[in-house]
Amino acid sequence: MPIDAEKERRIIDDRPPVFRRWTGVYALVLGFLGFLVLLFRLFTWHYK
Image (cartoon, rainbow, N blue to C red; front, side):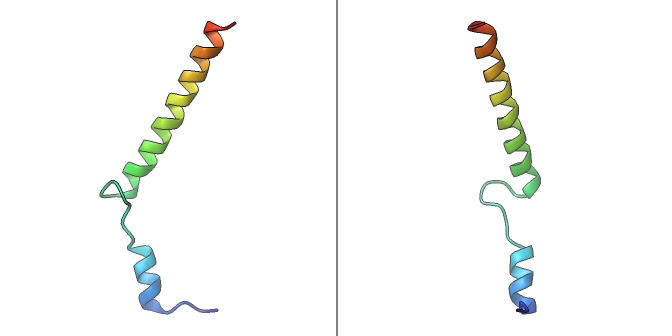
């Protein structure tokens, strides 16, 4: 089922909902995951 060229261009050119570029969204997700790792390490250390 082929996608027409205009629809494909819109899909590629979609902007992220929060930042100007998708790189900011990826950085936010990685930062949040790092925060969770740190948080769980602190919980583990505290209740060890």
